[in-house]
Image (cartoon, rainbow, N blue to C red):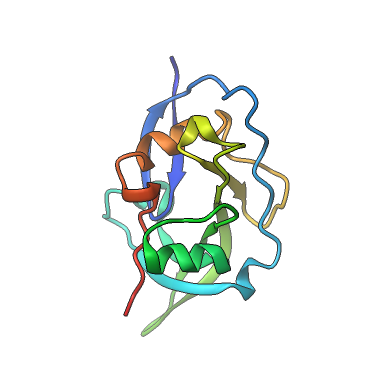
Length: 158
């Protein structure tokens, strides 16, 4: 089996390509996600183990059901989390946002995504709403997310 890179919220994992999960519909692009709750941001800099390909500025957004899940620990159907990765542009004394590298999406719907813990996973390249980065029905993403409570890495800030 040929290994490929798969994104995760805030990280990277090298996993083998798995067969496309039968019956799992594609995850839709999260229109309007930047108007949702901004959960937190972080920067991965050169030298970090996940810098290739996740170097840059990370913003995490949650829709209303996902925000409730972050607070209570259980994610209702319809929860959507978005990982927005932007290039980090370094100036003399500041780091600013550059071009978008990818938009990662997790959608909670156990009836549609039962094979991947009830979550659908997808990555969209750059500013594209249609160029998908996963080719395995989200199985590679789920393989990394599976050990996390509710498959979510993000924790709310006080």
